[in-house]
Image 1 (cartoon, rainbow, N blue to C red):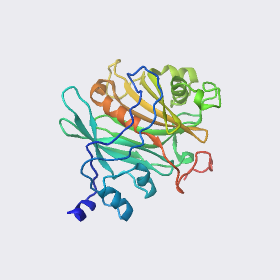
Image 2: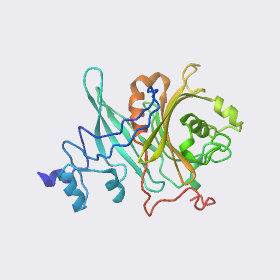
Image 3: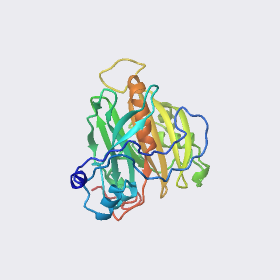
Image 4: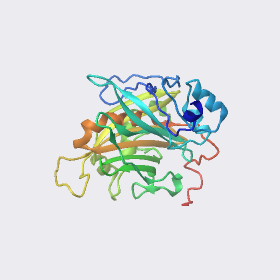
Length: 299
């Protein structure tokens, strides 16, 4: 029976611990520390060949660092509990680990109570910054990976780019406010040849908060994009609703953006927030390629 469990590709838990963050809707701009408890309680099933990792699984212990150490990517699935008004409901989530750019996050694959299965397509596979698709004519901000659910109109994308020195004037990131970080990222997020002010006018930041995790600041923000989200709708009040998390490393801002149509926000927003809260810059491996390396290279 144990051997059977260890060869199953799915890992599930009834109590995966995500840190409690002062995210959207919480206006107490406090600093929180990451919970270092990496325990998963409940039934665990996996198919790894590493003996020590199997031992940890059998003992109910698990850390994301172990996934990174063995090059684990998108084949992990687990259950995350969400507190509802009547009862706790569980969302099945999968793990994304990009060793090229050294980050990870969780994303939803099945939602309660209707057991809605999300049909994700990896529209942009992880790639190095130098060869990634630019988000603006100046090519500062680039998408290094992206996945899309066309049916439910969901987009998860990770972008990397340098800070905007006109907005983030200090070199000391501990002094940066979440609102300024959001404005810095959004100032480069436009495919049109427009000014920074015009780019910022396309978006409206609704809320922004900062959290400290493992001694590093993470900036969280929520915003709307003031332009038609699809070509098939003429509703002027239909926008894309975004939540994002940004962290800094090696002089570059790494951001995970999660979005859906504004009319779907009530259903999808809480899950997208959990996805963004799970975003982490992880310890680089030998596969890590810093953004400043070989900027001329496009393959």
